[in-house]
Image (cartoon, rainbow, N blue to C red; front, side, top):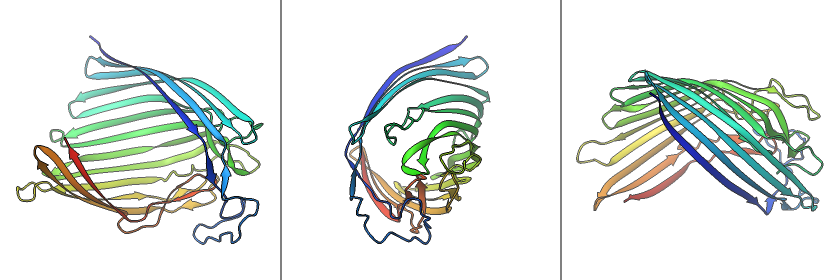
Length: 351
């Protein structure tokens, strides 16, 4: 006998963007720029203003979806679903012209999970995703970018030990995206479509309570394959075969907390952990690299009961060693410098 749990849904959102944006590159577009030994432009461009008018942009996007979760005999579970998206957008240029898009797509998904024994589950699933056309960085007369489509396959296993106090997961994934919007190498203020990008790798995660009060969670991702299978030719060398930008081969984190169990210090908790990343490419042309990094984070909190309500005081210290590192790049005109050392306090009352 099969058991069904169905889900129907509808979502809708609107984007309305108006205003001006800061402009002006720190160096002439097309010039070589060394992020480790930068040479900045020392004079103001008389043709550029501090703020450049940014064309208005709006988009409406709605989706309909259906999902059916099925319980089969022998501890086998299935999931099938489908989603319909419709997205329309308009970019109003400062010249009075406009660029319009209208996209719709049907995205299927499905998966199976088998639990042969209580502490082990194995699964596989497939899903398709949709992203509407991006007309915000195009000009009248330029070809409108096609919608972005993605296909993802995933295989994995989940385990539990010691009556659920320790869990571990392993997954292999293969994600392929088509028509990704990237900066035009001839004009970074505009975008063009990269044909096909694919990433394949493994994810590991272990979480649990090692000893009473001592909890740990660790995660590690190996992204061995992250390449452009089909690139573009925008007047420069084709980037087919290059590694994707912002895609380190190794990325992981480790976090531990200890909460005192004795009556004297009960409610007091300490924690600490690291986040680590290997080197990543700065552009799809692989012209420069963002270096790897390791950051250290600490926290402490104290929880007490006030008239039946939980009151928690917490202090976090992120990037404690004040490591200078780069959080990512948009491949065109920006490299993000990550947040330096900072402290944050909070008070939370639960009632």
